[in-house]
Length: 161
Image (cartoon, rainbow, N blue to C red; front, side, top):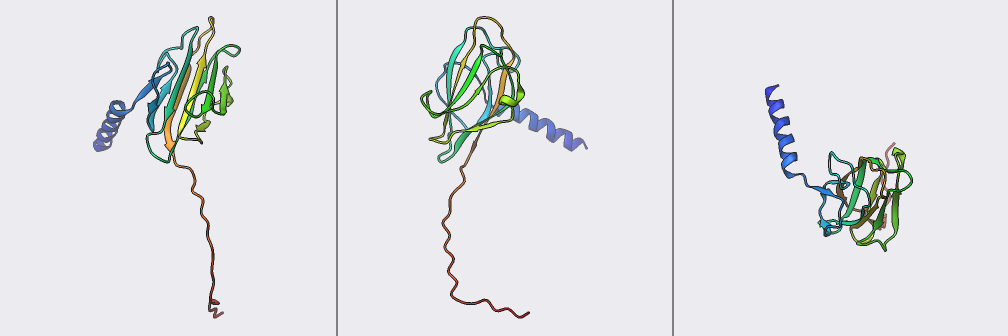
């Protein structure tokens, strides 16, 4: 039993050391396939008033697509907006839009890039109410590969029934 506790402790420490965290800001594009993405308040704070940020995440594994899985999302219903675009900027297709506290809006939804391995997130908040914001897990997936299969049967199988 003691070995299980030791392994669990080592696993938790390793994850704490190597897990990257990213907060919402106008920082440079991030190339990654792992980490946690937070609002500007980070893991334990609320976002601020009057924010207007755009941040891009791209895969660092050729042929893969970057994905965001939201585990929480709370913003002001009327006035604080999160937009997720497919691609390296906000001119890509709008994949998701969220505001408010309705967990069905975005929690648990996996949002994956389809055109080049990047997702761009735009966030705006007004000058009044702030909330806890969001937590999203970053990962990469590989799209399904299409196969063309041709069957050629040149003999009849033997059946001895």
